[in-house]
Image 1: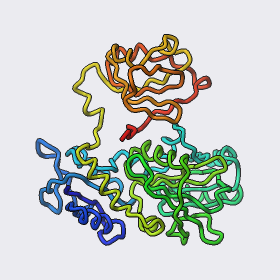
Image 2: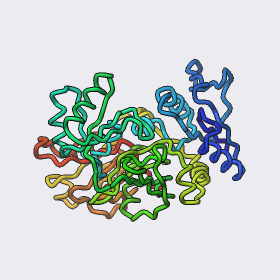
Image 3: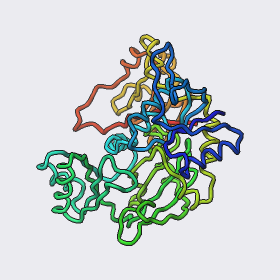
Length: 397
């Protein structure tokens, strides 16, 4: 496998470990400066130039894109995708996770616990927003912050108002979140690769600091995650559209609370804490998936007139339930069920004899007219129990 690693820090721990792991496994790895690419759209096929020359052929690309160059970095990753080069961190996944507001919006539509969060711009809306998340103390986050920078704990309402007003006057967008006091300055980082957690560590804040980031002086220790924490970490990464991710969770009173999904997780701390070969696990996963580049379904299906992908959310009034319809019967209607979501369980390629139940969600490909006839009438929001709509295909590997 010929692997491209997009990084502006070739000597960083994580980048060097990836190069070493790939080389030890007989692969060829090359570190490429993200900003030295030119996107070439002048020919018949999408292409890239690197340092003014045509880019060599690569089998896979691992983006390690810093927050400061997200826009250009995403453009480069998208071009690799158009060239059918595999990446475990597709552009939509990076974009989703980098925008803290967008990430929270996506997670809030799924069975993933997040801190109560609000986003406002008008000064008159600040006090009601603080009350909606449970009142002070509250956590105030800059949308563009990284490594704990731009995360502020406001102990009371007046301080929160002053901080928000100051940041907004500097044209900064901020989130207001409930302070999960029971976490006590601790959080858990789970390293997700594919459909499993390969390593996890607990980070503990230093002294009175509530931010547990290693860059803020926090300490780390290896931890064996409970099954529920593992399930939530994998689900959060997959919802974002990422096959390699660092998922940060608080240990809330009622279970895991996801606070962030990182598309370019550093693994110096977690490798040293767990003594596991994280870089090697990433390289092995990429090598196993390299023949399956991420596909944009909308682009691939434009040639299939009258066919498309639809999610059917089954409610109590659905005729499918009343008739005891099976997955196999849908196939006879020219509808293939790709994935069945039932509660917290994801069932890929469900068997034909499985009967459709209330609250199931079916990700289907098929005849649009046939599926249109099966869609239940739209209910008013006050009567509607929100049904999650995946932003990215769930990895059923």
